[in-house]
Amino acid sequence: MVTKRQLQSMDPYEFEDLVAELWESKGYSTNVRKKSGDKGVDIEADRGGRKEVIQVKRYSDGNKIGSEEVRKYATLYQQTDANKVVLVTSGEFTNSARELADDLGVEDINGDELVRELKRNNIRVGGSTRSRRFYKK
Image 1 (tube, rainbow, N blue to C red):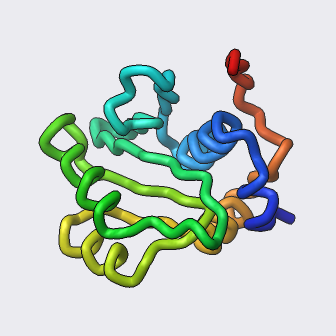
Image 2 (tube, one colour):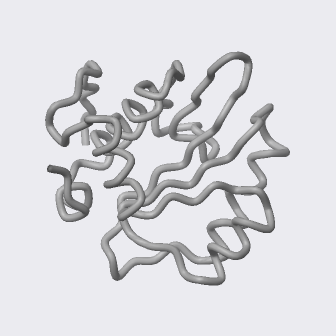
């Protein structure tokens, strides 16, 4: 069983891999971008000619994503050839951030929703089939 606490204690790069694995389980091919030069895109996901760009934030419950961050990532529509922009967090969004995301066409997935999606797709923390990437800190 996956919990928000597990997600919030993961290495940030492993968290990105886990989110990429979730998209792969839905039939997407994914590319996890390297930290430098990612321009706000952690994961590119393609399926049938549709491209989604995903920004992943491993946050605790007390560190909420606000409107300013949503606005920042909404610009990815202009910066990329994406059909959809997705902002995923292990934490929460403020109410105003969720409203703005809806207005700007940014899909927002909070920690509770992510836990449900991982369970629905039978993905476990630490059970990834993706090849792990190792980073020097």
